[in-house]
Length: 269
Ligand SMILES: C[S@@+](CC[C@H](N)C(=O)[O-])C[C@H]1O[C@@H](n2cnc3c(N)ncnc32)[C@H](O)[C@@H]1O
Image 1 (cartoon, rainbow, N blue to C red):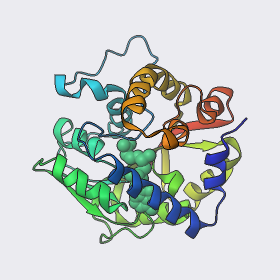
Image 2: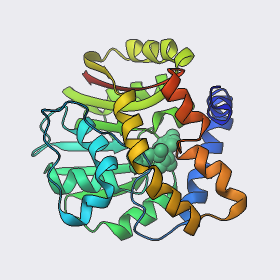
Image 3: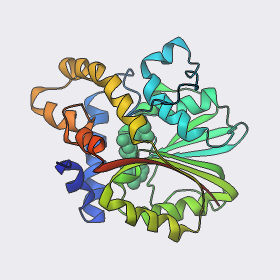
Image 4: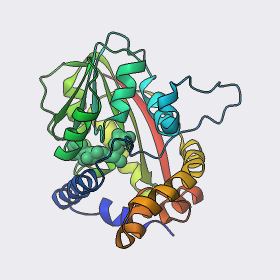
C-alpha cells in the first residue's frame, strides 16, 4: 500500500502543502540541534561492481550513503571554480560536502526553514560556503547568476514544481546545469515531466535510481533504529520512522513495489 502520509502531503493545495512542510522542517531542526545529524536524504549506493567506493575523510564515513547521493547529483558536471546554488540545503551537510570536496568557487545553500539555516551556519564555517533563507519558488537571486543549481530530495515539498523549475531556469546562466534528484509516486511522474518540459530546459540525462536508494535505506536501517531509540520521544516515533523511510515503513514498501520511484535528472539551460 502506497504511503498515506506522503500521498496526503503531496495532494494538498500548494499553500497548505508549503506551510505544512515548512512547519515540519522547522520543528525537526529545533527538536534535534546536535551537529551529528547533518543530512536528511535517503542515500545512494552504486550498484555497479566496477565503481570504486568514494574516497572520504574519516570524519565523513558515518554519512557515507547520504554523501553518495550528493556526489551522484553534484558530479553531473565538474564544479571546480563554478558558482553553485543548492536549493533545499536542509541541515547543510550536502552543501558542505560539495564545498570541501568538489571545490566550486562558491556554493550557496538555500532553505526556507530558518532553523536549518541557523544550524548550517553554525556547523559549517567553510570559506566558499554560505547559507541563506529563501523559497525555492521565488529564488532571491538575479537572473543568470549561477553556473549550476543542485536540488536533492526537496522538490516534493514545493507548492508548484513548475514555478520552481522556472525560477531555476531564470537564475542559471546560459549553458548552466540543473541537477535534480527526488522521489515521486508513479501517478505523479507525468505531471513532473510536464513541469520540466514547460521550463524550456534541455534534458541531458534521465536516470531512475530507486534501487540505489533502496540499498542505502537498507544499509542505514540499523543506524537509524539506534538513533530513534535514543533520541526520538515515543509519541513521535511512528511518524519519524515513516519520514525517514525505515524498512517497515509504507514509503519503503512503495519504493520496493514500484509504486514510488526515485529519479535523477540533469538539464542544461
Ligand atoms: C528531505 S530535506 C533534504 C535536505 C537536504 N537536501 C539533504 O539531502 O539533506 C528537504 C529540505 O527542503 C527544504 N524545503 C522544502 N520546501 C522548500 C522551499 N519551498 N524552499 C526552500 N527549501 C525548501 C526543507 O526545509 C528541507 O530542509
